[in-house]
Length: 441
Image 1 (cartoon, rainbow, N blue to C red):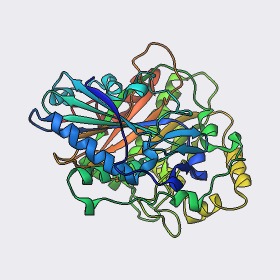
Image 2: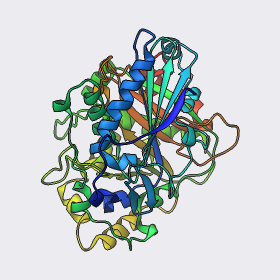
Image 3: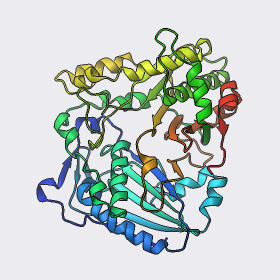
């Protein structure tokens, strides 16, 4: 480690903003840390100057994004008394190009900040913990990977993208280019409900399907040319509509996952399959919320399948799309209605008692690939990966993150129960359409 310090806002946070109350939508998110790493090439040995420049521009950014310079007070609020954002600077004795040519994904967790990294990716934030931590990993070649750890009950990834692009604009000296977020947008539209029962929090009802296992991380690349072919093959016969890249990859992965589980579980009592797909509600509300609205504007609809082997990919992709399309203006309005508890109870009762879960989230089209601190856009993005452990954990297993690639394709970073991986990768759809664990560059 080179250094660790708390970066404070360059101007004090006003007293009337020093308590940040989360919104109802924040309450509905898991109180957990979420991780993101951006990898930047940069030749030369002036990392010291770059790091200092990043510290100064981060301090400017925290004036606007003051909740990230605070700590968690309790389940419903954060103290924004300018305690400062923990920033770790680490020297990596390796060339970034060597790492990206043959990425050992098990090393990614080492890029995360101290108090998070020391406790592992299952650390849960509690009172007194930072709402965000950052680590700058400085490679011998001058490249830097910037890792972000943030509390999900404070913000979603769209908010993090806005934060990063604002920070990058300050780093480039472009004050006019930075986006000022609507910090109180979620609170004003969806005020918190302290009496909300834990049994009605949707994520709690989804996580009941999780079970301990030994998890491994695998990467599957769906190139742009492949996705174009798949999209053409999966056009709706009734409407002529074309599925999106994310729809297509989601359907392929879910189908192959279900078939792998069914093969491994042959002879056992069959369970329904549930796919939970995180959706950004900003664009789906009527009228829509602005993209720079801060906080959580996320819902995770579920799609249920009872007969994966009988379900054609053409059918599955449109069931996935329908599940996402149900999150519309009417749905968003019901979240802000007086009958919220009854609405959530109705959704809870629709969930199967037992099921095999696959979670999917998409980072596509969020602007993360546009972040530029002055030495170019990121060459790769990654999140947390499975711990390299022989012991069984619950964690975030059977979970897939979809990330844009530079050619317009999609990388699916999957954390799977190890016993499903062999069957999953033998599936004809994976063998035909995906590249497994390739070089990043």
